[in-house]
Length: 113
Length: 117
Image (cartoon, rainbow over the protein chains, first blue to last red):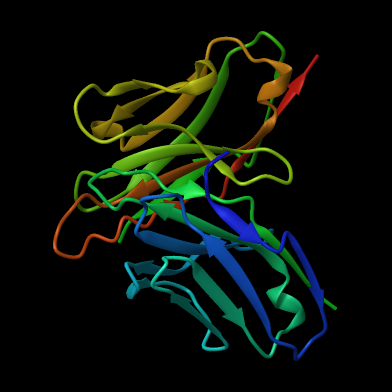
């Protein structure tokens, strides 16, 4: 158990809809990362938050947004969903010290129909 | 910019045989390197990491990896494969601390390890 909790585990929704994925980091970790995993793109970094502030942005679409709350949990919002957004979305957390690894949750599998 | 290349998207070995999963990286500065394993329907689990110091690092489940700067490689090995090692393995790189350090990992495309009885 990594200590990172993601909900829900599965999500099925229709094109054009909006969903919210939730992540609770490991106790003591201030940094949260979101990744998208798909068969054709592999593991793609989306966005990182550190103690409530956006720290780094990767290949995140404009239809996607995220935030980190004062209690350090994070939410990833996906809107105007398209079939191609179907993927496994992972949240990871770390202490953000030199060389610290990322600890991953079990992911949310999103299916857009 | 950093990048990671994993040679071979699928590797098949017999139980008891040597496991060798290849990883080459590209980085303008000495990187931090990681290997993760992903079992079906699970998240990524850290196997081992290299930051500084000894270039041969040992991880969980009998795996080890050697950092070779001259070859920009960080190959993962295990002397004797077990059926339970069947999974997908990811090599990843991050850039050490600096003013712009984020700690984010850049992953390779992954290698699926099949272990035959």
